Image 1 (cartoon, protein in one colour):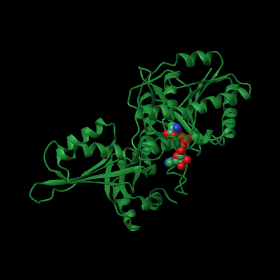
Image 2 (image 1 turned 135 degrees about the horizontal axis):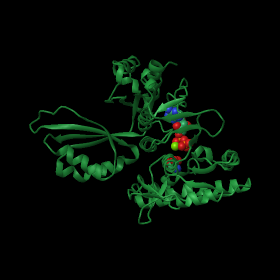
Image 3 (image 1 turned 90 degrees about the horizontal axis):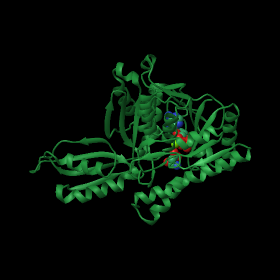
Image 4 (image 1 turned 90 degrees about the vertical axis):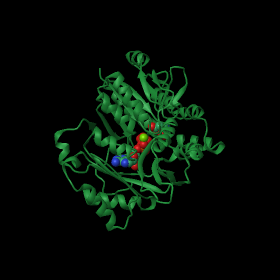
Length: 406
Ligand code: ADP
Ligand code: ASP
Ligand code: MG
């Protein structure tokens, strides 16, 4: 009997009709004799709403209480999905992340999975149940409820597929698969039949929210092959797996735009050893991820000083600012500026390794439409630039057309 993990995202469970649609799909696979584990997200909009309500009470709410709050979204959906399966006459049972044996570290709102002991899941599958597990949540060894970062139901599904040694892991969403760019922003985007872990990982961490980046990292580490496909039709999706030699033939696999970044600039930072270490250590201790960092030329106005710019995820901006404010007097930063109106535009492809001139072509394309580049960062398989947020989508379409056609 094959174990299949099927994950359904927020839009796929957005209302009772959609949940019924999910139940019918699950029932089909169950009738074929498979053991099914279903992972569901909160109904679309629910997590955002819960965050909004908490922030209306306090700008930086306790992260422990945020996890307590956000975990309720998925808990609603697991019970409704179980009920929908019961209505079809199937034996189904819902489990919270903790009940499914998902143990995490204690970093609230961004917890990492330490281990999964799926004893209960196995037992229930063996009794013939469809097991429905709440995505996005786990529990610490001490019994605290945690969540796995936005989009974290993808991670629940991939991690369960690894722990259960599932034959198949299917990520059902509201598009037909992984495209060369977000099909909602780039009409000419094309569905990819397959993509390597590394390319998917870069696209995901650079803003293509179709998969949570940490889930792709996990899949690569444990060799979980998965398919991204639509819950609204039966079209084949995109297979995500280890790189094959012919991947290198394609220079650019995809383009992404991350509108969820903010830039912090520290003006007049004393130019002496240890200052950057001090600042970024404090930010890291606050569990804020820093992405691009640019330090520019010292000003020659007596005491040497530099301007230091870096990007963080928008929801972490206030926290990062608060941390820097607390160091400000000690370090002697003249001014702290924050800019939320930025977009990070990236091109990704393993073929870049063997094709020179890719960055130059991207910069030329942006210049030809009058888009200014604010920051640049590159790796072996990606080039990212920061541009003005209001130019982001236009820039994305132009770059997509230049590399991947209309
Ligand atoms: P779910 O709720 O199922 O987890 P998400 O909203 O998190 O779904 O992710 C699906 C969305 O990701 C799509 O609706 C699409 O707009 C967006 N997306 C961004 N980049 C891409 C891409 N390269 N390919 C496909 N979808 C993408
Ligand atoms: N409900 C969570 C979120 O909106 C997790 C998920 O959808 O994967 O981020
Ligand atoms: Mg998602």
